[in-house]
Length: 491
Image 1 (spheres, rainbow, N blue to C red):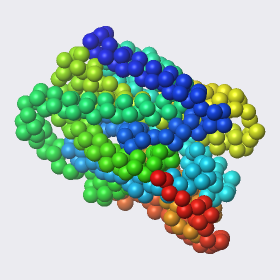
Image 2 (image 1 turned 45 degrees about the vertical axis):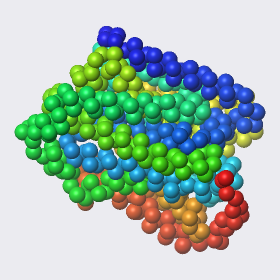
Image 3 (image 1 turned 180 degrees about the vertical axis):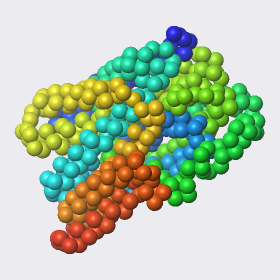
Image 4 (image 1 turned 90 degrees about the vertical axis):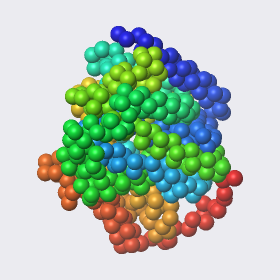
Protein backbone atom coordinates (compact mmCIF):
# COMPACT_ATOMS: atom_id res chain seq x y z
CA UNK A 1 0.00 0.00 0.00
CA UNK A 2 1.11 3.55 -0.76
CA UNK A 3 0.73 5.04 2.71
CA UNK A 4 1.84 8.53 1.61
CA UNK A 5 -1.31 8.66 -0.52
CA UNK A 6 -3.59 6.82 1.88
CA UNK A 7 -2.85 8.76 5.09
CA UNK A 8 -4.18 12.16 3.85
CA UNK A 9 -7.35 10.39 2.72
CA UNK A 10 -7.74 8.71 6.10
CA UNK A 11 -7.31 12.08 7.84
CA UNK A 12 -10.03 13.49 5.57
CA UNK A 13 -12.41 10.65 6.45
CA UNK A 14 -11.77 11.15 10.17
CA UNK A 15 -12.58 14.88 9.85
CA UNK A 16 -15.83 14.08 8.03
CA UNK A 17 -16.72 11.52 10.69
CA UNK A 18 -16.30 14.07 13.48
CA UNK A 19 -18.39 16.61 11.58
CA UNK A 20 -21.14 13.97 11.49
CA UNK A 21 -20.84 13.45 15.27
CA UNK A 22 -20.92 17.22 15.90
CA UNK A 23 -23.97 17.60 13.65
CA UNK A 24 -25.82 14.82 15.45
CA UNK A 25 -25.22 16.53 18.81
CA UNK A 26 -26.46 19.84 17.43
CA UNK A 27 -29.50 18.05 16.01
CA UNK A 28 -30.11 16.32 19.34
CA UNK A 29 -30.68 19.73 20.94
CA UNK A 30 -33.71 20.53 18.81
CA UNK A 31 -37.09 20.06 20.42
CA UNK A 32 -38.64 16.69 19.86
CA UNK A 33 -41.30 17.95 17.46
CA UNK A 34 -38.56 19.37 15.26
CA UNK A 35 -36.63 16.11 14.80
CA UNK A 36 -37.95 15.34 11.31
CA UNK A 37 -37.34 18.89 10.07
CA UNK A 38 -33.82 18.84 11.45
CA UNK A 39 -32.89 15.29 10.35
CA UNK A 40 -34.26 15.59 6.81
CA UNK A 41 -33.97 19.36 6.12
CA UNK A 42 -31.39 20.79 8.52
CA UNK A 43 -34.00 22.97 10.23
CA UNK A 44 -34.24 25.21 7.09
CA UNK A 45 -31.18 27.12 8.32
CA UNK A 46 -28.75 26.94 5.38
CA UNK A 47 -26.85 30.11 4.53
CA UNK A 48 -25.73 31.10 1.02
CA UNK A 49 -22.30 29.47 1.04
CA UNK A 50 -23.49 26.18 2.56
CA UNK A 51 -26.52 26.10 0.23
CA UNK A 52 -24.32 26.63 -2.84
CA UNK A 53 -21.78 24.06 -1.77
CA UNK A 54 -24.35 21.42 -0.82
CA UNK A 55 -26.00 21.82 -4.25
CA UNK A 56 -22.65 21.64 -6.04
CA UNK A 57 -21.40 18.76 -3.94
CA UNK A 58 -24.66 16.82 -4.30
CA UNK A 59 -24.68 17.27 -8.07
CA UNK A 60 -20.93 16.86 -8.52
CA UNK A 61 -20.83 13.14 -7.93
CA UNK A 62 -18.76 10.11 -8.85
CA UNK A 63 -19.82 10.62 -12.47
CA UNK A 64 -18.40 14.17 -12.44
CA UNK A 65 -15.12 13.25 -10.77
CA UNK A 66 -14.47 9.72 -12.02
CA UNK A 67 -16.96 8.65 -14.71
CA UNK A 68 -17.04 12.02 -16.54
CA UNK A 69 -13.25 12.43 -16.81
CA UNK A 70 -13.03 8.72 -17.68
CA UNK A 71 -15.46 9.23 -20.56
CA UNK A 72 -13.60 12.42 -21.61
CA UNK A 73 -10.41 10.30 -21.67
CA UNK A 74 -12.16 8.01 -24.16
CA UNK A 75 -14.19 10.55 -26.18
CA UNK A 76 -11.98 13.66 -26.17
CA UNK A 77 -13.00 17.33 -26.17
CA UNK A 78 -16.53 16.52 -27.37
CA UNK A 79 -17.34 15.22 -23.89
CA UNK A 80 -15.84 18.33 -22.28
CA UNK A 81 -18.23 20.47 -24.33
CA UNK A 82 -21.11 18.21 -23.33
CA UNK A 83 -20.17 18.38 -19.65
CA UNK A 84 -20.09 22.19 -19.57
CA UNK A 85 -23.86 22.31 -19.99
CA UNK A 86 -23.92 21.46 -16.28
CA UNK A 87 -22.65 24.92 -15.31
CA UNK A 88 -26.19 26.32 -15.31
CA UNK A 89 -27.70 23.65 -13.05
CA UNK A 90 -27.69 25.51 -9.74
CA UNK A 91 -28.72 28.75 -11.43
CA UNK A 92 -31.73 27.15 -13.14
CA UNK A 93 -32.86 25.30 -10.03
CA UNK A 94 -32.77 28.33 -7.75
CA UNK A 95 -34.16 30.73 -10.37
CA UNK A 96 -37.05 28.49 -11.43
CA UNK A 97 -37.95 27.17 -7.98
CA UNK A 98 -36.56 30.07 -6.00
CA UNK A 99 -38.65 31.87 -3.40
CA UNK A 100 -41.97 30.44 -4.51
CA UNK A 101 -40.97 26.85 -3.84
CA UNK A 102 -39.50 27.72 -0.44
CA UNK A 103 -42.57 29.75 0.56
CA UNK A 104 -45.01 27.02 -0.51
CA UNK A 105 -42.93 24.36 1.22
CA UNK A 106 -43.01 26.34 4.47
CA UNK A 107 -46.74 26.99 4.18
CA UNK A 108 -47.40 23.31 3.58
CA UNK A 109 -44.83 22.41 6.26
CA UNK A 110 -43.30 20.15 3.59
CA UNK A 111 -40.06 18.42 4.55
CA UNK A 112 -39.64 16.43 1.33
CA UNK A 113 -40.46 16.86 -2.34
CA UNK A 114 -43.21 14.25 -1.98
CA UNK A 115 -44.64 16.29 0.92
CA UNK A 116 -44.92 19.26 -1.43
CA UNK A 117 -46.56 17.20 -4.20
CA UNK A 118 -48.98 15.63 -1.71
CA UNK A 119 -50.10 19.03 -0.42
CA UNK A 120 -50.28 20.60 -3.89
CA UNK A 121 -52.22 17.82 -5.62
CA UNK A 122 -53.98 16.14 -2.65
CA UNK A 123 -53.68 12.73 -4.26
CA UNK A 124 -52.51 9.38 -2.85
CA UNK A 125 -51.56 8.06 -6.35
CA UNK A 126 -49.26 11.08 -6.82
CA UNK A 127 -47.54 10.29 -3.51
CA UNK A 128 -47.16 6.59 -4.31
CA UNK A 129 -45.86 7.23 -7.85
CA UNK A 130 -43.43 9.83 -6.53
CA UNK A 131 -42.10 7.59 -3.78
CA UNK A 132 -41.73 4.67 -6.20
CA UNK A 133 -39.84 6.80 -8.76
CA UNK A 134 -37.46 8.14 -6.11
CA UNK A 135 -36.73 4.71 -4.66
CA UNK A 136 -36.30 2.94 -8.03
CA UNK A 137 -34.14 5.50 -9.83
CA UNK A 138 -32.13 6.68 -6.86
CA UNK A 139 -30.99 3.14 -6.16
CA UNK A 140 -29.23 3.31 -9.54
CA UNK A 141 -27.71 6.69 -8.67
CA UNK A 142 -26.56 5.49 -5.23
CA UNK A 143 -25.08 2.31 -6.68
CA UNK A 144 -23.04 4.51 -9.05
CA UNK A 145 -21.60 6.43 -6.08
CA UNK A 146 -20.78 3.27 -4.13
CA UNK A 147 -18.99 1.90 -7.20
CA UNK A 148 -17.09 5.16 -7.67
CA UNK A 149 -15.92 5.21 -4.07
CA UNK A 150 -14.80 1.60 -4.28
CA UNK A 151 -12.95 2.22 -7.56
CA UNK A 152 -11.09 5.09 -5.93
CA UNK A 153 -10.08 3.10 -2.84
CA UNK A 154 -9.17 0.12 -5.06
CA UNK A 155 -6.89 2.25 -7.27
CA UNK A 156 -5.13 3.82 -4.30
CA UNK A 157 -4.61 0.79 -2.10
CA UNK A 158 -4.40 -2.18 -4.42
CA UNK A 159 -7.16 -3.85 -2.42
CA UNK A 160 -9.75 -5.96 -4.19
CA UNK A 161 -12.82 -4.11 -5.43
CA UNK A 162 -15.09 -5.84 -2.91
CA UNK A 163 -12.88 -4.99 0.07
CA UNK A 164 -12.67 -1.37 -1.09
CA UNK A 165 -16.44 -1.25 -1.51
CA UNK A 166 -16.97 -2.47 2.05
CA UNK A 167 -14.61 0.14 3.55
CA UNK A 168 -16.24 2.98 1.60
CA UNK A 169 -19.78 1.89 2.45
CA UNK A 170 -19.09 1.68 6.18
CA UNK A 171 -17.41 5.13 6.21
CA UNK A 172 -20.39 6.85 4.59
CA UNK A 173 -23.11 4.99 6.47
CA UNK A 174 -21.71 5.88 9.88
CA UNK A 175 -21.80 9.65 9.54
CA UNK A 176 -24.98 9.86 7.42
CA UNK A 177 -26.99 7.62 9.73
CA UNK A 178 -25.84 9.55 12.78
CA UNK A 179 -25.94 13.13 11.50
CA UNK A 180 -28.84 13.35 9.03
CA UNK A 181 -29.30 16.31 6.64
CA UNK A 182 -27.38 18.74 8.83
CA UNK A 183 -24.29 16.53 8.67
CA UNK A 184 -24.78 16.17 4.92
CA UNK A 185 -25.04 19.94 4.34
CA UNK A 186 -22.11 20.91 6.58
CA UNK A 187 -19.82 18.20 5.21
CA UNK A 188 -20.88 19.19 1.68
CA UNK A 189 -19.53 22.70 2.36
CA UNK A 190 -16.17 21.25 3.44
CA UNK A 191 -16.14 18.79 0.55
CA UNK A 192 -17.07 21.45 -2.01
CA UNK A 193 -14.06 23.54 -1.00
CA UNK A 194 -11.84 20.45 -1.25
CA UNK A 195 -13.20 19.77 -4.75
CA UNK A 196 -12.34 23.24 -6.08
CA UNK A 197 -8.78 23.24 -4.75
CA UNK A 198 -8.14 19.60 -5.65
CA UNK A 199 -9.25 19.93 -9.28
CA UNK A 200 -7.13 23.06 -9.81
CA UNK A 201 -3.96 21.48 -8.37
CA UNK A 202 -4.43 18.31 -10.42
CA UNK A 203 -5.09 20.19 -13.68
CA UNK A 204 -1.87 22.19 -13.22
CA UNK A 205 0.05 18.98 -12.47
CA UNK A 206 -1.31 17.25 -15.59
CA UNK A 207 -0.49 20.22 -17.86
CA UNK A 208 3.09 20.36 -16.55
CA UNK A 209 3.54 16.59 -16.94
CA UNK A 210 2.24 16.75 -20.51
CA UNK A 211 4.65 19.51 -21.52
CA UNK A 212 2.04 22.26 -21.78
CA UNK A 213 -1.39 22.55 -23.36
CA UNK A 214 -0.16 22.95 -26.94
CA UNK A 215 2.04 19.86 -26.66
CA UNK A 216 -0.83 17.77 -25.20
CA UNK A 217 -3.23 18.86 -27.96
CA UNK A 218 -0.59 18.02 -30.57
CA UNK A 219 -0.27 14.51 -29.11
CA UNK A 220 -4.06 14.10 -29.19
CA UNK A 221 -4.25 15.18 -32.84
CA UNK A 222 -1.45 12.77 -33.78
CA UNK A 223 -3.30 9.93 -32.11
CA UNK A 224 -6.79 10.73 -33.42
CA UNK A 225 -7.86 14.14 -34.83
CA UNK A 226 -11.46 13.45 -33.71
CA UNK A 227 -10.33 13.77 -30.07
CA UNK A 228 -10.17 17.57 -30.46
CA UNK A 229 -13.52 17.95 -32.27
CA UNK A 230 -16.99 18.42 -30.70
CA UNK A 231 -18.11 15.01 -32.06
CA UNK A 232 -16.06 12.55 -30.01
CA UNK A 233 -13.27 10.12 -30.85
CA UNK A 234 -15.56 8.01 -33.02
CA UNK A 235 -17.70 10.89 -34.34
CA UNK A 236 -20.67 9.55 -32.38
CA UNK A 237 -21.61 12.78 -30.59
CA UNK A 238 -24.06 14.23 -33.12
CA UNK A 239 -25.42 17.78 -32.91
CA UNK A 240 -28.84 16.39 -31.98
CA UNK A 241 -27.39 14.32 -29.13
CA UNK A 242 -25.25 17.17 -27.79
CA UNK A 243 -28.18 19.61 -27.91
CA UNK A 244 -30.56 17.19 -26.21
CA UNK A 245 -27.99 16.48 -23.49
CA UNK A 246 -28.62 20.01 -22.23
CA UNK A 247 -32.06 18.85 -21.15
CA UNK A 248 -30.57 16.05 -19.04
CA UNK A 249 -27.82 17.97 -17.23
CA UNK A 250 -29.02 21.55 -17.69
CA UNK A 251 -32.61 22.70 -17.36
CA UNK A 252 -33.93 19.23 -16.50
CA UNK A 253 -32.04 19.21 -13.19
CA UNK A 254 -34.99 21.18 -11.77
CA UNK A 255 -36.77 17.81 -11.66
CA UNK A 256 -34.11 16.03 -9.57
CA UNK A 257 -35.53 15.54 -6.05
CA UNK A 258 -32.07 15.58 -4.41
CA UNK A 259 -31.43 19.06 -5.88
CA UNK A 260 -34.97 20.44 -5.59
CA UNK A 261 -35.18 19.62 -1.88
CA UNK A 262 -32.29 22.00 -1.25
CA UNK A 263 -34.49 24.86 -2.40
CA UNK A 264 -36.61 24.16 0.68
CA UNK A 265 -33.73 24.38 3.12
CA UNK A 266 -32.23 27.87 2.87
CA UNK A 267 -32.61 30.51 5.53
CA UNK A 268 -33.58 33.68 3.61
CA UNK A 269 -33.55 35.46 0.23
CA UNK A 270 -30.02 36.73 0.71
CA UNK A 271 -28.83 33.15 1.16
CA UNK A 272 -30.51 32.10 -2.08
CA UNK A 273 -29.03 35.00 -4.08
CA UNK A 274 -25.53 34.34 -2.76
CA UNK A 275 -25.93 30.64 -3.56
CA UNK A 276 -26.89 31.49 -7.16
CA UNK A 277 -23.57 33.24 -7.77
CA UNK A 278 -21.29 30.96 -5.75
CA UNK A 279 -22.88 27.76 -7.08
CA UNK A 280 -22.64 28.77 -10.75
CA UNK A 281 -18.98 29.79 -10.49
CA UNK A 282 -17.92 26.74 -8.48
CA UNK A 283 -19.76 24.32 -10.78
CA UNK A 284 -18.10 25.88 -13.83
CA UNK A 285 -14.62 25.60 -12.33
CA UNK A 286 -15.05 22.00 -11.19
CA UNK A 287 -16.67 20.68 -14.38
CA UNK A 288 -14.18 22.34 -16.73
CA UNK A 289 -11.14 21.30 -14.71
CA UNK A 290 -12.14 17.68 -14.18
CA UNK A 291 -13.09 16.96 -17.78
CA UNK A 292 -9.99 18.70 -19.16
CA UNK A 293 -7.91 16.53 -16.84
CA UNK A 294 -9.60 13.45 -18.34
CA UNK A 295 -8.69 14.46 -21.91
CA UNK A 296 -5.19 15.72 -21.06
CA UNK A 297 -4.40 12.46 -19.23
CA UNK A 298 -4.66 10.42 -22.44
CA UNK A 299 -1.19 11.21 -23.89
CA UNK A 300 0.43 10.94 -20.44
CA UNK A 301 -1.12 7.57 -19.45
CA UNK A 302 -2.32 5.83 -22.62
CA UNK A 303 -4.17 2.54 -22.54
CA UNK A 304 -6.15 2.82 -19.30
CA UNK A 305 -8.78 0.10 -19.69
CA UNK A 306 -11.31 1.15 -16.99
CA UNK A 307 -12.19 4.82 -17.46
CA UNK A 308 -13.27 5.28 -13.84
CA UNK A 309 -9.64 4.77 -12.75
CA UNK A 310 -8.22 7.62 -14.85
CA UNK A 311 -8.32 10.27 -12.10
CA UNK A 312 -6.67 8.24 -9.32
CA UNK A 313 -4.03 6.85 -11.70
CA UNK A 314 -3.12 10.22 -13.24
CA UNK A 315 -3.02 11.83 -9.79
CA UNK A 316 -0.44 9.33 -8.58
CA UNK A 317 1.48 9.69 -11.85
CA UNK A 318 1.92 13.47 -11.98
CA UNK A 319 1.88 14.53 -8.31
CA UNK A 320 4.04 13.71 -5.29
CA UNK A 321 2.44 10.91 -3.28
CA UNK A 322 1.46 13.09 -0.31
CA UNK A 323 -0.10 15.73 -2.59
CA UNK A 324 -1.92 13.06 -4.62
CA UNK A 325 -3.51 11.87 -1.37
CA UNK A 326 -4.74 15.39 -0.61
CA UNK A 327 -5.97 15.98 -4.17
CA UNK A 328 -7.79 12.64 -4.29
CA UNK A 329 -9.83 13.79 -1.34
CA UNK A 330 -11.72 15.82 -4.01
CA UNK A 331 -13.31 12.86 -5.84
CA UNK A 332 -13.80 11.13 -2.49
CA UNK A 333 -15.56 14.30 -1.28
CA UNK A 334 -17.73 14.38 -4.42
CA UNK A 335 -18.74 10.77 -4.07
CA UNK A 336 -19.45 10.91 -0.34
CA UNK A 337 -21.37 14.17 -0.57
CA UNK A 338 -23.64 12.81 -3.29
CA UNK A 339 -24.23 9.42 -1.75
CA UNK A 340 -25.05 10.92 1.64
CA UNK A 341 -27.60 13.27 0.04
CA UNK A 342 -29.22 10.43 -1.89
CA UNK A 343 -29.35 8.24 1.21
CA UNK A 344 -31.10 10.97 3.18
CA UNK A 345 -33.53 11.61 0.32
CA UNK A 346 -34.55 7.96 -0.09
CA UNK A 347 -34.69 7.53 3.68
CA UNK A 348 -36.99 10.54 4.02
CA UNK A 349 -39.20 9.15 1.24
CA UNK A 350 -39.59 5.81 3.02
CA UNK A 351 -40.03 7.23 6.54
CA UNK A 352 -41.90 10.49 5.99
CA UNK A 353 -43.83 9.80 2.81
CA UNK A 354 -44.69 6.11 3.18
CA UNK A 355 -44.32 5.05 6.84
CA UNK A 356 -45.90 8.15 8.44
CA UNK A 357 -48.49 8.72 5.73
CA UNK A 358 -49.81 5.20 5.25
CA UNK A 359 -48.38 2.76 7.82
CA UNK A 360 -48.19 4.47 11.21
CA UNK A 361 -49.36 8.11 11.19
CA UNK A 362 -49.41 8.24 15.01
CA UNK A 363 -45.82 7.01 15.48
CA UNK A 364 -43.98 8.46 18.48
CA UNK A 365 -40.86 10.60 18.10
CA UNK A 366 -38.81 7.70 19.46
CA UNK A 367 -40.26 5.34 16.84
CA UNK A 368 -39.66 7.90 14.08
CA UNK A 369 -36.01 8.32 15.13
CA UNK A 370 -35.52 4.57 15.23
CA UNK A 371 -37.17 4.20 11.79
CA UNK A 372 -35.09 7.04 10.31
CA UNK A 373 -31.77 5.63 11.51
CA UNK A 374 -32.75 2.07 10.63
CA UNK A 375 -34.03 2.81 7.14
CA UNK A 376 -30.93 4.84 6.27
CA UNK A 377 -28.68 1.95 7.35
CA UNK A 378 -30.75 -0.72 5.57
CA UNK A 379 -30.82 1.29 2.33
CA UNK A 380 -27.05 1.58 2.44
CA UNK A 381 -26.70 -2.19 2.81
CA UNK A 382 -29.04 -2.82 -0.15
CA UNK A 383 -27.08 -0.42 -2.36
CA UNK A 384 -23.84 -2.11 -1.24
CA UNK A 385 -25.23 -5.43 -2.51
CA UNK A 386 -26.28 -3.83 -5.83
CA UNK A 387 -22.77 -2.39 -6.29
CA UNK A 388 -21.02 -5.77 -5.96
CA UNK A 389 -21.12 -6.30 -9.76
CA UNK A 390 -20.13 -2.91 -11.30
CA UNK A 391 -20.23 -1.72 -14.94
CA UNK A 392 -17.03 -0.40 -16.57
CA UNK A 393 -18.26 3.22 -16.81
CA UNK A 394 -20.49 4.24 -13.92
CA UNK A 395 -21.44 7.60 -15.51
CA UNK A 396 -24.10 5.92 -17.62
CA UNK A 397 -25.68 4.30 -14.56
CA UNK A 398 -25.85 7.73 -12.94
CA UNK A 399 -27.27 9.42 -16.04
CA UNK A 400 -29.94 6.71 -16.34
CA UNK A 401 -31.15 7.64 -12.85
CA UNK A 402 -31.05 11.37 -13.67
CA UNK A 403 -33.20 10.92 -16.76
CA UNK A 404 -35.81 8.81 -15.02
CA UNK A 405 -36.23 11.27 -12.16
CA UNK A 406 -36.47 14.25 -14.51
CA UNK A 407 -39.09 12.53 -16.69
CA UNK A 408 -41.13 11.83 -13.54
CA UNK A 409 -40.88 15.13 -11.66
CA UNK A 410 -40.04 18.14 -13.79
CA UNK A 411 -43.60 19.07 -14.81
CA UNK A 412 -45.43 18.19 -11.58
CA UNK A 413 -42.95 20.50 -9.79
CA UNK A 414 -42.73 23.39 -12.26
CA UNK A 415 -46.36 23.47 -13.42
CA UNK A 416 -47.53 22.85 -9.86
CA UNK A 417 -45.74 26.07 -8.91
CA UNK A 418 -46.73 28.26 -11.83
CA UNK A 419 -49.87 26.96 -13.59
CA UNK A 420 -53.14 27.44 -11.75
CA UNK A 421 -54.92 24.73 -13.77
CA UNK A 422 -52.38 22.02 -12.84
CA UNK A 423 -54.22 19.24 -11.03
CA UNK A 424 -53.79 15.69 -9.79
CA UNK A 425 -54.99 14.12 -13.03
CA UNK A 426 -52.36 15.97 -15.03
CA UNK A 427 -49.66 15.08 -12.48
CA UNK A 428 -50.55 11.37 -12.47
CA UNK A 429 -50.71 11.21 -16.28
CA UNK A 430 -47.42 13.10 -16.57
CA UNK A 431 -45.57 10.79 -14.19
CA UNK A 432 -46.92 7.61 -15.79
CA UNK A 433 -46.14 8.89 -19.31
CA UNK A 434 -42.68 10.14 -18.29
CA UNK A 435 -41.55 7.05 -16.38
CA UNK A 436 -43.13 4.54 -18.78
CA UNK A 437 -41.79 6.12 -21.96
CA UNK A 438 -38.35 6.68 -20.41
CA UNK A 439 -37.90 3.02 -19.47
CA UNK A 440 -39.28 1.83 -22.83
CA UNK A 441 -37.07 4.18 -24.88
CA UNK A 442 -34.03 3.35 -22.72
CA UNK A 443 -34.30 -0.35 -23.56
CA UNK A 444 -35.03 0.44 -27.23
CA UNK A 445 -31.90 2.62 -27.39
CA UNK A 446 -29.81 -0.07 -25.69
CA UNK A 447 -30.75 -2.47 -28.48
CA UNK A 448 -30.99 -0.19 -31.51
CA UNK A 449 -29.11 3.07 -30.85
CA UNK A 450 -30.57 6.45 -29.90
CA UNK A 451 -34.06 7.07 -31.27
CA UNK A 452 -33.96 10.17 -33.57
CA UNK A 453 -30.31 10.62 -32.50
CA UNK A 454 -31.28 12.41 -29.26
CA UNK A 455 -30.66 11.50 -25.63
CA UNK A 456 -33.13 9.08 -24.03
CA UNK A 457 -34.63 11.73 -21.73
CA UNK A 458 -35.73 14.09 -24.54
CA UNK A 459 -38.93 12.39 -25.74
CA UNK A 460 -40.17 11.38 -22.24
CA UNK A 461 -39.87 15.00 -21.05
CA UNK A 462 -41.93 16.17 -24.04
CA UNK A 463 -44.50 13.37 -23.67
CA UNK A 464 -44.89 13.99 -19.94
CA UNK A 465 -45.52 17.71 -20.63
CA UNK A 466 -48.19 16.91 -23.23
CA UNK A 467 -49.83 14.38 -20.88
CA UNK A 468 -49.84 16.87 -18.00
CA UNK A 469 -51.49 19.65 -20.01
CA UNK A 470 -54.02 17.43 -21.80
CA UNK A 471 -55.25 15.58 -18.69
CA UNK A 472 -55.30 18.72 -16.54
CA UNK A 473 -57.55 20.42 -19.10
CA UNK A 474 -59.70 17.34 -19.80
CA UNK A 475 -60.33 16.76 -16.09
CA UNK A 476 -60.43 20.44 -15.29
CA UNK A 477 -60.87 21.34 -11.64
CA UNK A 478 -61.32 24.69 -9.99
CA UNK A 479 -58.29 26.88 -10.73
CA UNK A 480 -55.70 26.62 -7.98
CA UNK A 481 -55.74 29.68 -5.76
CA UNK A 482 -52.15 30.46 -4.81
CA UNK A 483 -53.40 33.13 -2.41
CA UNK A 484 -54.60 30.32 -0.15
CA UNK A 485 -51.04 29.60 0.85
CA UNK A 486 -50.35 33.28 1.46
CA UNK A 487 -48.22 35.85 -0.31
CA UNK A 488 -45.55 35.84 2.38
CA UNK A 489 -41.95 36.63 1.57
CA UNK A 490 -38.79 35.05 2.86
CA UNK A 491 -36.93 38.00 4.29
